[in-house]
Image (cartoon, rainbow, N blue to C red; front, side, top):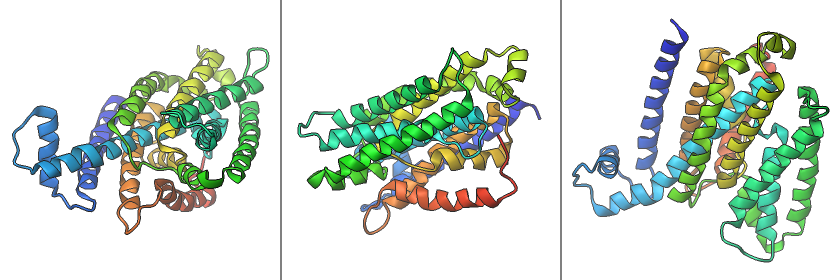
Length: 336
């Protein structure tokens, strides 16, 4: 079976799984709503199809549950896409979107906005987005020398910047006083109080970024052979590395800015899909993105289904950490 047919089959199946999880998630909440009513509401909103669903149920589905579900899908899509590229870029199975300091930069910006004495509308997501990009480009500049950016130096610079920014965040938390609870809650990752505006803005960054990464999937496959071999096969190695790093950082920054630091999605999902579809990024990248969207919608549904809602980052970590340990012990862990 050729790559195009395999990709189409996997993408079709995962799209079906994502729609099923979205419909199931929209039925769950303090007010139970049947899956038929959710489907009718979606058709009414998208196509104007007449329905007898009560107005109150339509309001709950469209104004409360769907913004959160759609934002979760966009964030999971972005984190899994960036994780797939980072693991291929670094040729390291333990790499994830935070490895170049993006998450630490976003955390620094967000916590600074929370503890700041002045409240400004939209300051938190903007500060998180700017902090993420500043950290990523700072790591890139630290690792670059003479127009070249060795992957090993980039990795070590990312670890150093993460550690430094972690200290900055810890200091601000100590000094945060009454804002400590809000800061800790943001750092755990959350999708509570999501809005259509957040989902739309995040999607406006994530969709074009994903298409750019997908256009370079073949080049990413060639980079797995090593930089010298990739250059001999006609790949402009440094330019390709810069583009992959910039776009992956943008996707991660957009996700973290609206949902906080949600761990393990970018690490675990690409591994799961690599075991199923293989290492070819022409298949792995779109399937990981869709699986990441499905995974985060499902875990967020679990996070809000108990007697008291918990940050979704706790659920993803509870699922991801055991799988991470399994990877460490499994013979299936290979360089991507």
